[in-house]
Amino acid sequence: MKKKVAIIGTNGIPAKYGGFETLTEYLSKYLNQEFNLTAYCAKTPKEKRLTSINNTRLVYIPFKANGWQSLIYDAISIIHAFIKNDVLVILGFSGVFAFPFKFFFRKKIVFNIGGVEWKKVRGKKSFGKLEVISKKWFEKICIYYSDVVIADNQVIWDYVKTTYGIDCVLAEYGGNHAIYKPINEHLKIKYPFLSAKYDVTVSRAQEDMNIHLIIEAYKKTPERNLVVVSNWEISEYGKNLKQENKNKFPNIFLEDAIYNVDELNAIRSNAEIYIHSHSLCGTAPSLTEAMFLKLPVICFDVNTNRASTENNSIYFSNSESLVRELKSLDQNNIERLGERMYEIAQRRYNWERIVNLYKNSIN
Image 1 (cartoon, rainbow, N blue to C red):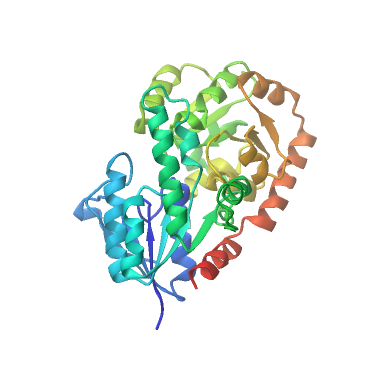
Image 2: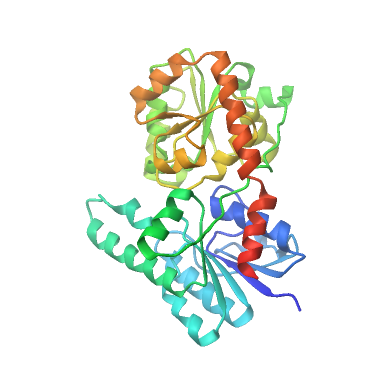
């Protein structure tokens, strides 16, 4: 009998943007012959619901996977999964209140910590201290009740080891699904910036993604074009950035989120440079994808990004330092940078390797 495995903690699949969604999709592609898989999905209109993807059953819960509803969404998903499955792969800890039910159902929990969430709220003006305390407690409960803990970055692995004395599994994200796509005339018409050289960045419109720093740097670097692909409407931060900068600078192009994979790959594949500006994540799928596309990568200078790129990237800490790095580039060091990123990606960020780590954790 195949083990019944539930994957919990995402918006669901098919994936759009987001590390956990991307991970869930590739677990479903690679493990559907080994296990009977179920993926839990957030509130979705009935006409858009699917029964299954990649031979993975989809279960829809009538709550959102983000914001305050995520606590209810994940808790209901976990309790339902305890009843129906043998192993729960839980991504993130918003369902913390359901973790102790493990002792009633006697099921195995594989928990991906995602990141050190309390550090993301530290420094907030309103309820910052309360959030830090509660999220530290959430983290401790989830790790205590888990059979296997997974970290997606060496820095997070070190944190878990130092804080809890646990040797967790280091499993990052694959990037080898990102494939080079040439630019055709149809795309040039749809995206006129493709007719000239450009740099690119792709991320969610969240403040910790530091899109504002990149835009400010390119305002001071008019000789280079910048393409920013983001889901601007998800936050006030994104809406304000778009309103303040859309069509205001001839070298800066702000594009709405692109969910057509071929189009997105064509835009990324043919860029001169990829700017990775995430500051509070572990190993980001957008980064591993860019590395597999042989793109030279310039990273925001935090220890997680240094770990992902093995200290072989170029790093910036503010708009001024990014301007300096952009102005010092030449074609030779751009090419060498792309080659270094690709070598690291081939060695570390392929889905076969990553999925095998999850397979061993589930068994």
